[in-house]
Amino acid sequence: MMDGELTNVTSEPRFYIFAFSTSKHQRMIILSVILLIYLIILSGNLLIISLICLVRRLHTPMYFFLCNLSTLDIMYVTTTLPKLMYVCSTGDHVVSYTACMAQMYLYITLADTECFLLTAMAIDRYVAICYPLHYSLIMSKTICGLLAFPAWFMSSVNASIMTYFVHNLTYIDLVEIKNFFCDLKAMMNTSISDITTLNTLIILNAVLIGVIPSCMISASYACIIHTVLKIKSPGGRWKTFSSCSSHITIVVVYYGSAMSVYLQKSLVQDLVLSMMYVTLVPTLNPIVYSLRNRDIKGALHMIIHRKRTWPSEKNI
Image 1 (cartoon, rainbow, N blue to C red):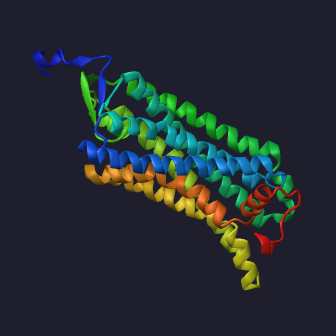
Image 2 (cartoon, rainbow, N blue to C red; image 1 turned 30 degrees about the vertical axis):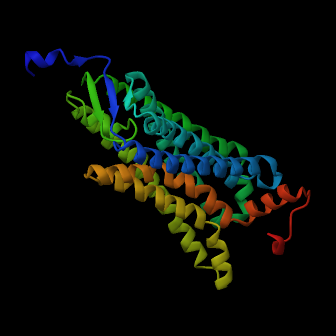
Image 3 (cartoon, rainbow, N blue to C red; image 1 turned 90 degrees about the horizontal axis):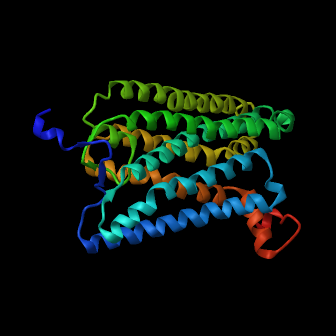
């Protein structure tokens, strides 16, 4: 580095969020779309959480994890979209160092937690289908807590480690983040420090938080398919496997969009895929679990009609 460039290096840089640098009119259109998506995600997931909390019949392990997932999805989009809406409405793309680090920490925590929660939900479906007679005993409140709480805790610890390493990187005074939020990939690529250690840590993270959970999910569904194929009735096979369809949809979309983002090299496509990665699962989660889930529709029917008894199938 030349002597003249040293003056631009600072321990408290500012970050310029690239976002969608367009005209004011175009930014207003983007703002309207993002606001609509944000409100849909909030209302849909809040509805799921409310139904699970209010209806006693939904106080089961499956819906306990779904409530966690819906809570996570609300926090997930709230970490990124409000700032993007502010950028679109004001045209102010600059983010402070502290705010950027906080956003990255929360984003990593929530993304990692989602991987663990999806794995816990796969385990729940595995026990429900492969060991139905022992389901209540195996998936007790204690076991559910031991699956959910460590997911949040370990993700928070991992995010703290990653944030610490990023905090020790050196940046110039004004750094352009080629994304609409402060994500780890963009923060690394804009640093002028050696990121070899951080790259090694990311590979380790990919194995521990990406590969291992996805293998556990795959193994769970391999066992589920093996059990379902033993059912002689085609209707019975479909009814049993359909209880997993919502979870499978979310898993495929989540991991598919995640892989697309981190394998993408084009800036424009990266922005679009990042937006899909952040918003698609939180949007789909309440939709697939309400449209394809008879219990959720039954609970909604009870609340709307203020009934104390569970509705018959023809009314759902």
